[in-house]
Length: 255
Image 1 (cartoon, rainbow, N blue to C red):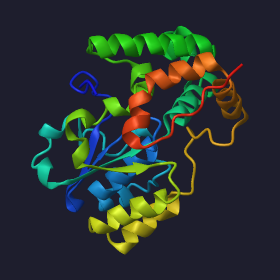
Image 2: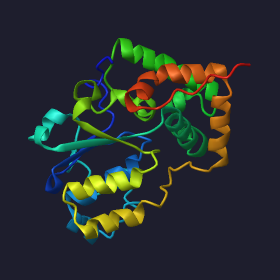
Image 3: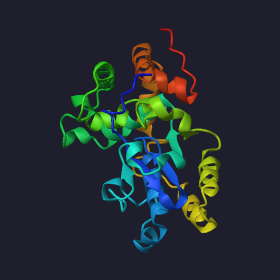
């Protein structure tokens, strides 16, 4: 895996000093909740006094902005002695969710014309342009990644995985025991029972960005999985995500 993290500072590392814990937050992968969880753990008293909940701590107005966030592990004092984890997601599912949320539902391109690769709601156009953009970045990583890059670049390009993957505990968002795993991890790091209960009470809520069970999402997923052209390109884009994080490559349909 080629190292791209020095240019791809897409998702901040977030710390909880009381628990000696670092989380790497990857967009469209439990990112809103994980950001809020790490903020809560960073300062439980301030979080509770702000009358926030995990599901209401909107990223753009988050309580811990710039307080517990870092772009590189080396900027975190004594990070080598801290527990580090990240949440990952099936690459196709993450892509489908991202396109559905940003390009079909939010229509972020209405305000920012270049978003969704200037393709608006055209899925094939978007796949083609993001494929080209990823190939360009892989050959010559550039500075100043944009909105699309941060939401759709491979998970394996984040978190300094190319040099520090062995130090991470990886949790699969779509695994059968995800809730038990993340709560268990927090208990191991000394989060007390009332904190665990506060977090657990919010985990069954959906954020405004959730696309689960939506008609739009089902349509995009069906289109991708039944199109040899689209699926092949998406598998090429995210091949190392499948390989590194233990996801099975879907079969490309024969038409």
